[in-house]
Image (cartoon, rainbow, N blue to C red; front, side):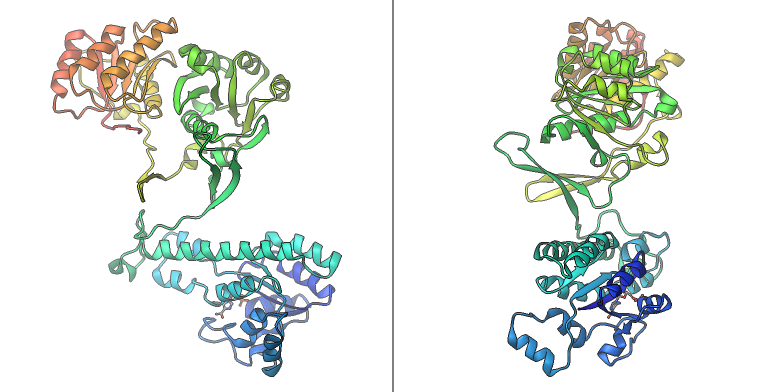
Length: 532
Ligand SMILES: NC(=O)c1ncn([C@@H]2O[C@H](COP(=O)(O)O)[C@@H](O)[C@H]2O)c1NC=O
């Protein structure tokens, strides 16, 4: 058996080659790889020795030769193919171990020049990968060091690879080449010719957008039972993101569970446990129906639940800190679809042992800890529309105290400012039109997804009433400006004493006058948080 090894990432290659050699497999290799293997005492034939041509043009041409591609592509079951190999003295290549020039890592480096990028476009590697992968019944193709152990185990056990393994390797190889070509296409179609001579800064939205997603699981059905669905992850998921979740117990996740879990997780990630304390978000139908911070998980959950106990039934609960037994016991009194946290104490998990249907997801914090969470957000949002898609930078804007502009005679107190910032944070995660009443680090009434801001305001106050919560002295966030004073009047009638909104309406003055007339404080954020 002959193996051709040509790798840029040389992790584990010496050990793998040693094991192949021990099995009596002949090693053929390109310059750098061959040198490393030879330096490790392995007998290796340089590709140049096979092709009869030196590697040339700075490595641009090494393996692009019939002696290589014939050996990879010849079908062993076709006598004509084998006769052709014999006629031209070509040996079969039965195992190809190839990983490509690091194009993706090169262009990710700041200041990467077009020349650097171009020189890191591998030509001969993908050509060999494709040849080997096309001839998968006869050739095992390895494109990643993570595949070495399994392949070796099979070779050591049986002296050959099974057809199933070779097929899986071939699929992985074509996937790798597709990812590689997508990266090249994205990069080149994101830079302009004018910039290309210097260090190009790739545009966020390339002229052709190629995406690669990896399937995590098939789902039982989609948003509705007559729809089919599957769950995919990014090629390189961010630590702390939903797709990195480990399900510790419970029924299979559904499409709607995942969509709601994402809404809850993204919202709870706005609260860094080390700075903001414990935070709990309860989501129903993609909207937070209760959010609160507290001294611990129990208090945060209990406050969040109070906002809307009716809607919380069958909710998705996300918490930003380790879930302990006390909080778990309280939560276990309600029907939960999904429960998510960075960690759980063994006692907390024991509480749910008998509630086998509750889906428990653990999402490990990123290496930088809770304060690094926000970095794990998607940079770009994608939405499908008929035969197309919309892309935008994600709404990751965080408001600070310094951004607030007080526009009324009444100044908000320090406490009111905290409530306003809290309400604003939540408003970002509520579907538009969003009106959120808050006080003392908890939501007191949420009006979501109405076509009129006025209706959202009315609904928020009706819901607070239904939950037995007084809105007197509350802070209100409106995700977009009040177009007329009527919305403001509704929230003040309900008891609000301070309001945050973006401002920017042609009738801002009418609304400011109304706030002054009603004796409430109002601040402008200067930012809008539509969420459709
Ligand atoms: N030009 C060629 O014929 C060619 N054949 C293989 N390569 C790549 O050369 C790299 C290995 O080079 P070396 O063994 O010299 O370190 C691999 O990433 C392989 O994909 C080539 N390089 C670029 O296209």
